[in-house]
Image 1 (cartoon, rainbow, N blue to C red):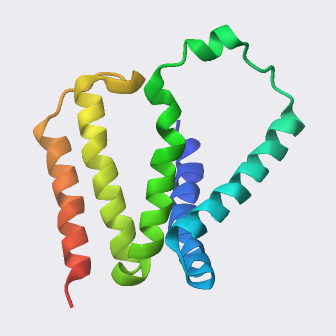
Image 2: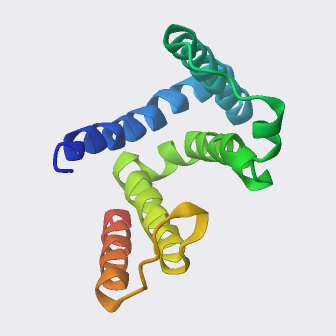
Length: 146
């Protein structure tokens, strides 16, 4: 489990980097939606190459039919994130943007854990966990101060 920490930190760092890269793409292309589309096209091509290299077995129609409707929304949620971040990043700055995104992720994570939604193990909301999220949000507010 501890070995996963450096990889997770790296992925988090890449999200902050992605916000800056996609913001530059938005500036160059002149539109956040177009920048998000181009970003997702590059991501789709990258994933297609990975899948082609790995050659996984493709699911049949019956398996696809068993997928819950909400499981198909992940790409749309990612698109909202990418398009929104390309607009917010230059206004908020990398640190404030990232900490607010993390605070939002943590708040939703508490809900998902508390109710055991979307396959997450049920972990009741406790004062310490809520206080942790509140402290992250307080940190976000401190980054907004001038």
